[in-house]
Image 1 (cartoon, rainbow, N blue to C red):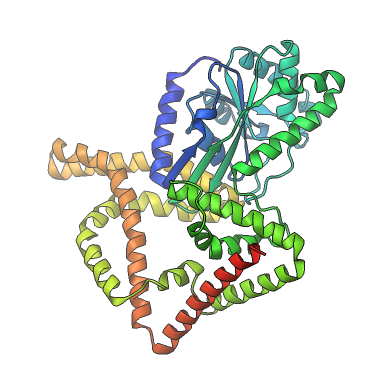
Image 2: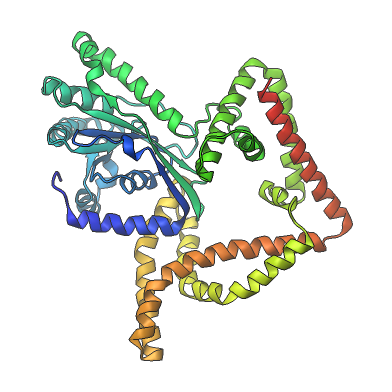
Length: 447
């Protein structure tokens, strides 16, 4: 558990590759803030089941020991695999009061790991929400950190590294993932408060960890208008980002623009609740109108750039790229679509859907690639063809997905251009309504 593992590193390399294949882009920032030569506890927000620990584990060099919910370790196979992957169980009240005493042994094991100047990781929320809202934090991290330091007379120099995880979507394929590492918190800062009142120190430390993680991710605090806030940033986010500079990276630029936009909207709601209510009414009117024509906001946004000239250029590109798409589709369609259809029906809690899709893909895709390469070998009797084909299959699949989205947009552009005049007029009215709404949102947050 404490020793560096070659097997773990091989698995992590494979998972990193799989994450690259399944995500549109993975952006990591703040890695330089991770301390070297010091014990570390990584504390991240938790919104997307087992995808969250993969996001952290695959974006920093540490082979951290993860503390995970005990119910994941129920079967012998799961216990073996999770232990091999440097995970240890933490028991909650729902796991039975009799099991809570097992945490003492776990915490002692964790302390030994930290004393070896290694790192551990866990989620202070102790559960995942499936929303851009952090749940209340538990005391596990403050307790482990302060008790470990106290046992070593506060000479460990233990650091808590806050981590923000952001997804553009929680279960859709080809999404954006952003991982932000923040400034570490020195546990030694709480030495005096812990000596005076351990419980108060733990609560203060817990609150600071929450306050340090929140700015690293997209946090929507409103319960009543959660979806409306999502829609507000969807409509006005790009417009706001054009007038404010946050980062040279275009993905971080949008991420930070959305964060600030949400923050300013929350201030506006608190200061002008009646005007905010009117803004929400106009927002809902727009989305209801979009729904009324069986479209989406993304579709309405795109219509503003649709023209016959652009369409003919896209059509030529679509025809020229079709052979590449066909190859990628042939090799990847079955392992991609069939497991997803099955899992979509079987997985009751949709927040686990991404985890199950990804986990199934780790096994199913290489298995299908081997079968397809074997079929190629049987048909061609050529290793020169089958081996390169096997290597290129995942890359062809990723490229085919990008082309699929491009073809879909091109087809939708054509349907708009060929639509009757009344429908095109309605769409153009929605484009104007969206533009006016975006400008109104920006104007309101400047008041």
